[in-house]
Amino acid sequence: MVSTLTIHLRLPAKGAGRTLRKKRAAPLNSNVRRLTMPFVSEELIEKTWKKMGAFEGPGIQKLQKRHQKSQKALTKFVYSFLDDFSEDTCGILLFIYHVIAEAFENVKPRPKRVSKPQIEKVIEDLEARTSRSTTESIERSPEPFALKYVYEALTEENDVVLSNSEIASIFALHEVVIECLNRACLRDSDNSA
Image (cartoon, rainbow, N blue to C red):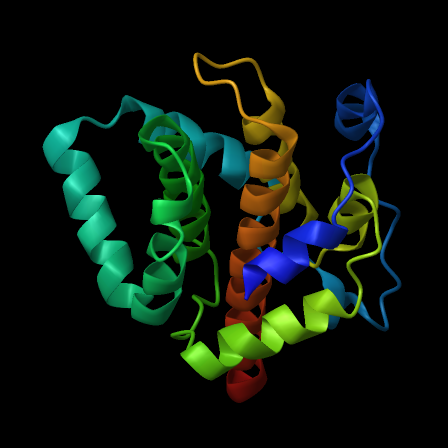
């Protein structure tokens, strides 16, 4: 499913990463704020990845089990792609996924469970707009700070060097995850309104 999504993604031109860090989101129109305001802030993402980076063995396993329980279909979806990558690349993919999942666990309203049909709907919706560049995807994402974190985590210098196709595939996978979790939060806020 995601493989068709990754074919259309383009990486930004060299040096675009610096541009991403300097750009600020335009003010949101108050009439559409409820639908477009991100649930995950830049501060929450930073706090979450720092907290996750400090975890060791048992803490990581406990966190993984909690995410598997709270978002079973979404976690299963992500883990289904592990055979496509090397062990080191899988480590990066999973770390990013659990940072995103943990960040969404700490927002109000918390996301409802994501189902397999909801994941398929998000993939279908994203495939309809995949001609965008990575930078444009981040800017137009309902969760720009979360998606920006994914891009930066994939492109920063690591011990593991990722190919352009690995970066594009993992970015597309997490774009699906983030969109699903955002919609799951919106479902909850729609029900409580």
